[in-house]
Image (cartoon, rainbow, N blue to C red; front, side, top):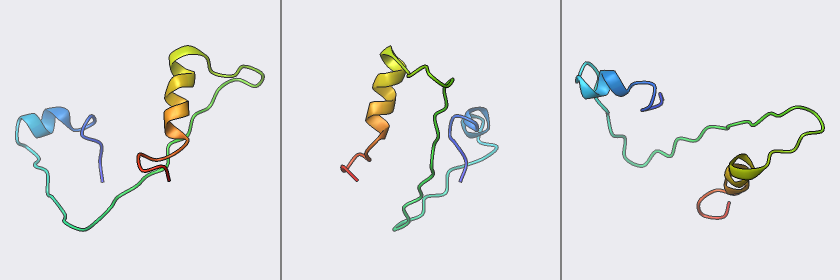
Length: 58
């Protein structure tokens, strides 16, 4: 599993192609870090609030 963003040029030039896989749900963990004592604010805080639960409220 690789990011489409990381492979954009290869996908657009067709050096690589997507291979759809039915019935498989691939997941990965993402982590956010920030300096001790400094909580994220503004857009960073908003993004983190969206990630605390999955799209289906997981």
